[in-house]
Length: 353
Image (cartoon, rainbow, N blue to C red; front, side, top):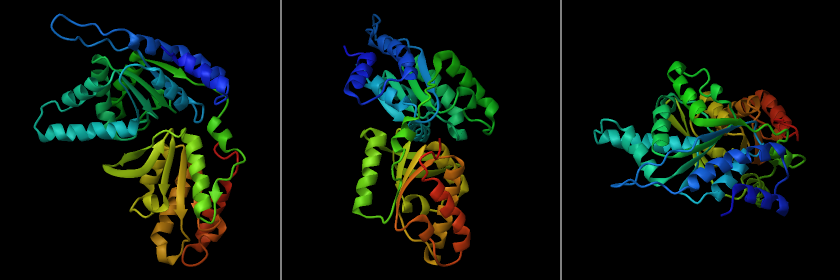
């Protein structure tokens, strides 16, 4: 049986990762869960009894510290049914299941939804746990409690300590028992590496590609594969005040979309703030020239860049022109100078550090 420690050491020997004391320090926590899950499931006389869920792991820390990479190794080391999924995507599936159960007049809609998950996996590996939507906040406590009771081990990464989840959210006092549950049922561990590998990966690299052509698309594809580990991406759905904002591709904190996906849709400041809160790197492709002919799209672009700038989100983009030449005629040219300045600043190697 290959352990996670074996996999980590093999990656070191191959030179695909660098030795990091903070990463090594959390290996025992992952190994503890892996060993518990590897134990045979006890069977009752008449039926298979629910296995006891191992104490989970809530791994938090700054962006780019290798949390997702460690999660990949953990999932690879398991010999039980496991699902690796972004937390937002998982919660969207849960809400869809609840809607279907309610349509069938199920009294406790959460029960069959949780039962389905329990029947399918022994371990859930969540990437990027954060809770910004009240509909998630109101059900996640009961959901986690049911999953754990059903024997599902839960491992999650987050950029926030548990006490900061759903911070300043509506009716947050109703959410506090969930934070207490996390602290009781999961080991809360900080990955305090001094190295931001994601930032280092881009240090000195070009992040604005103009003009947008075959060469720029190839360069961005290379960056995407490097930053996401060439693993499968999935759409990211963010719920903002009951509306859904869709990002076509997401993996390991990196989102990828075309200009039209985010600026050609009727999105507002709240939507862009939610996007900036949900992602750490945004790859935005095919930014057109802006003018009076696409004034609404230009306004949304300005609003989005402001949100990304304030949240220190790393931007990688392809565009028809350099920032200063994107918007050269029509209403809004003067105001766009500030956006162009921000876009130029966001290209700095130390941006977001």
